[in-house]
Structures are given as structure tokens and as C-alpha cells.
Length: 60
Image (cartoon, rainbow, N blue to C red; front, side):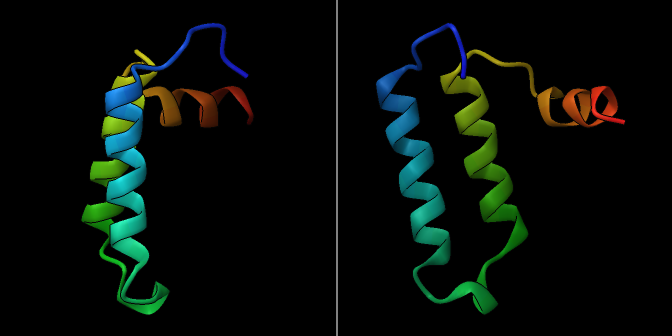
């Protein structure tokens, strides 16, 4: 999917944050926890913080 290899420490941190956010059940997930996990994942893949918005624009 991406040409670069992610930073394994940051990738693991993002996964842990996302899993932790969902452990209480999907009804209890806080958007801020998911956003924080996304930000760490973007950093792990060395992608800009605007990556999601940029892709959404491209897909329109």
C-alpha cells in the first residue's frame, strides 16, 4: 500500500491506542482517542497530518 516501512515503535503505539479506545465497546469510543491513534499512525508512516483530508479531496 505504501512504499515506505513504518516506524515500528510508532506503528505499535498507534495500534495500542486504537485497541485501547475500543476495549470498552464501540459505543464508548471517544473520537479524540481515535484521532490520537490516527495522528500517531500518520507519523509512523511519515505521512502529513492532512493525509486523510487530502485523499478525500482526491477521491471526489
